[in-house]
Image: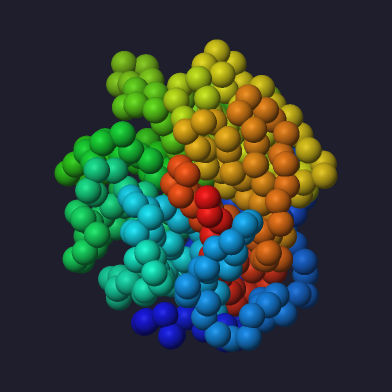
Length: 371
């Protein structure tokens, strides 16, 4: 598929994704702290949410504020994650539910000028996250699928770590020291998988105090300082082989969807469903604040100065100032839910998502802000 394939056409498919986890398990699109899935806007369809005219916007001309860069239709689905090693190489991964609990994935690459479709293994399911460290690239998604590639060209090598549950987040300190986290969000234990450069090893988190059934994202500052957040406010901390993973009280039962930071004394976690929750770590303790004026948050990325960009449902975008817990909202220019965000200091920020809080089939969107 080239960018010409990524056009806004729709047809009906089922909402439920692989292993029964609804999209609301990773989207702020429904009831508050219980973590139960909800379809959000009911009868509204993705086609009704498409604001462009079935043409793919692929140039991303940026002025002040957020600007549209890419609109895609049902052949691609909704974007879940965006990441890149440089402003001229930016990846966005997507997922589209199919009948029978199946899904298919898509990968788009921004080459500094336009978005170009990238080949995937023929049976690639929906993809939920993309991340790279060094020259190695990682993607993870439905059915426990992990794809790995060295460099930005060539074929992807499939891996698994002994599960068919969805995987939601990836982070690593080194190409041979990478974590993937996941879970079904309903009745199975959350888990983490670790890559040592050769194979993946799975750890299940049983009997957590948070009664959680999924970890959604993972981020860290070093090989022995890794944080993971998830369902029912689950907060886990890895401090190395000696102590392993430790559950930390987060102070909330709201789902925590994403986490990012600049170092061991500056970390932000966001989430919530009907209202946003923001947690900040200062190296000693976590502070938490709820914001009923913001309908949940799905993604966070932090610049080197500690300013965080956050995104969420209904096209929500905003910033959280260094040391703050308050969201200052911005006009994103799209009504579609935003799920992932990433940026390059002083250059640009990207946010991606789609009609994830509406009925499928899903359409996708990528927006850009310079600087």
